[in-house]
Image (cartoon, rainbow, N blue to C red; front, top):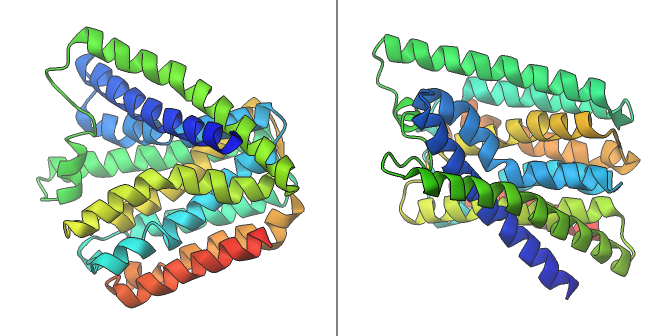
Length: 318
């Protein structure tokens, strides 16, 4: 039953996160916040709400391995699995989107995250630093987007930002309130259920909490991105997947651990420092040919990335 509870917790988390995004986006648009700002901030935070609640709940319950494992494991899965499996279905024309700036920022954030991990704990100082860096990055993104719009440059990604995910101009007020209520109630409920179940599974099999965080929890929270990218690949529309993965990984490192660290300090398992953080960084570096040299992500790379992820999971579990 513990696996059923874990799955139920994950489903509740994902549904509640989706409801919160819809409610928050439409409320923000109704009170006059520009769609561009909503896309760059509220949607970004909302789509990461399940991971954020898991990390907060895990930190509060004294299992920081699940909190950190969720982020490190999700970032690794995003690169190797969320890009690898769709590449097996269809070639992704990553050269059509310029992600160089965001990619360099993500690498810098990864290095900063690893450096802070070597302090041995993500405490409130770490949280303030990570969130301050995130605030600077978001401010710069908003300025860039506004400048592009003023200059009248045609930018497909900017057009996407003008139509935030979950936006519905005709959504009535009661429905917005319902979505917000479901999100605010469901997120902590799902997080509590998943963290408790994951902790019990770790004790059942005699493995550290970090292993469950890196595998079961991280993979579970990456499933929506994987499903979305696979469906986009089937429709031959997965070219933006690389940019989405870069943005998601950046947000995981800075926002999720930043907020969780402010709430309760999280000691870093030495195994992270020896192995998992370097795997995360190495996976990120594998994206360099696609970002800088215009290589398209084809089936050969899909096999390589997917195989690397399977190998990583085997190493973690044995």
